Length: 193
Picture 1 (cartoon, rainbow, N blue to C red):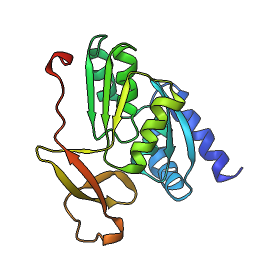
Picture 2 (cartoon, rainbow, N blue to C red):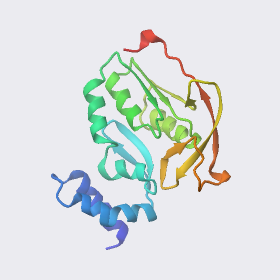
Picture 3 (cartoon, rainbow, N blue to C red):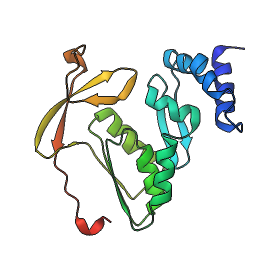
């Protein structure tokens, strides 16, 4: 059996077998390293919709393996968001929380997803519109700040694509830098609760 076939079988065990016995050990001893060094580029189904992932990134590996991003926070959002709410996701990454919120608030209400990374913003837009047919999501490619201007963003760790920072890491070279617009975003107070 090839390592890739074994990895897919273990992923199915993680996602669908009841209980937790041995699951963390499988991830720590085999799956994490395998998926980092032999990345899968695929679409995964979350509870709220589908998103594209690349498993070389630690953040995207989690929904690939478990079917959900940050399960405790996801459960909190599902319990609290209701039709009539507006949800603003600042630093939306690929949109896992935005999709969850879009489903929870309903098609007549609003989700605003703000993401400065051009690559993640494109993925977020694809996830919202193309893959999940969400009409209540608006994506904004921008960073959020209390001032207007441009900000250089750096990728702190290439294995964690969600760890973007405005502080230049000591080991960062100029090629990893991205400049993103930053704007103070104002939301109509009547649309929020």
